[in-house]
Length: 468
Ligand code: SAM
Ligand code: SF4
Image (tube, rainbow, N blue to C red; front, side, top):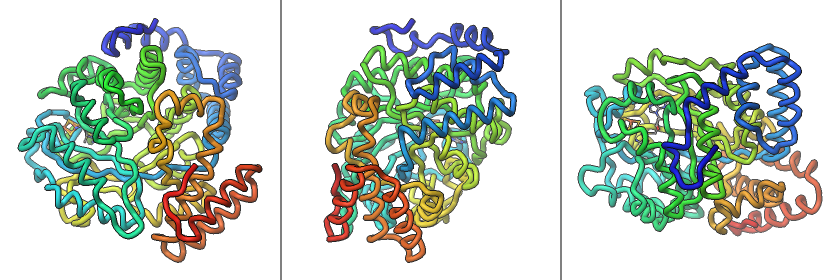
């Protein structure tokens, strides 16, 4: 049972996870189909039901799993897909995570912490590409100014204004903080605080994190408890897939999610599904101990979609365009695009690739990704309305669960997509995008359609940042 007072370090129970997986390791097809039928109601699943789906690998059942995930994704998220870019501000790190190029003892990577001027330059380039949402990322060491460096960097990001563009929501993927530091992060107007446990399997965690503060599993796994205590109510959890058995990890993600929901009344806002990619100076990254195949990756996304239907799923440019296309339909709600994982990478355009964290699977610029997404029938969205209207945490979930959030999301997705088309898109993308908007409107029910058209006419008349 989940406790209301303990933090996640004692609430996530490895023995219970292993026992649930063993109990359901050979489910009857009829049992799998019962679970899938329940999953189609989009009310989420119990850990035992997740274990049943994770154990089913017959091709027919797989096809039914993917079909159920497509249905739930379509019902809750419709055709929209939120876009963001990571902003790496520093690759200096005191930890020794064996899979990461930024690990302290790796001499093959050039170290760099961007100055505030350099950060402003990077942000200017991303704003000029059309981005509205960024994720600030850093190694775990801020040599000169300490944590203040992160706070200053956030202020710099929000201070950049270029023509009709600016960053409207900045999320953060940085090392765990104390409650007091999390309060400062919230005051700095951070959107989601994101942190991946990497692996919930303690023995594997110990082997992979051999030095530095990050070697302390409990300090990391309890970070979201401290963030929520400090009032940050949008948190994003995740696993680095490839380190331990993926079935164990998805059950642990569920336990983490249920713990936060029981303790704070709201679960995580997002779950990220990074897969281990080759990184300079990391043997582990070249031969992951539990490599996840493309098929299993699709299963992970589909099962998570059914298990926690209202939690966003984030996929990064670690994955190839082909796999990304296939996985959108299964439940992904946010993707990064046009990414660089080396500090200064947007200004210097790959000249410092020897400072990158890992190699990317999708190298396409934002415009090309948007064209592709739109031609597949999705609405690329830069919406930041919920965060700015204070519809976060429990308020967001209270709208999301009865399905009311869609009335806001779809019009806002269309108006921010139109902003992108008018202000930044290439003529080719503009043509594909305008057609996609027409197609979406044609199938949209009233009054949502009318609402969307009103928002979009404001954008066509020259207004920006209109939302509902
Ligand atoms: N340093 C902080 C930390 O470790 O939480 C935050 C930034 S770290 C650069 C962000 C994430 O990158 C890590 O949580 C890890 O999951 C991911 N990562 C590290 N090495 C990777 C690799 N070789 N392939 C894919 N993702 C990787
Ligand atoms: Fe440092 Fe984060 Fe890389 Fe670990 S994953 S070495 S903490 S940057």
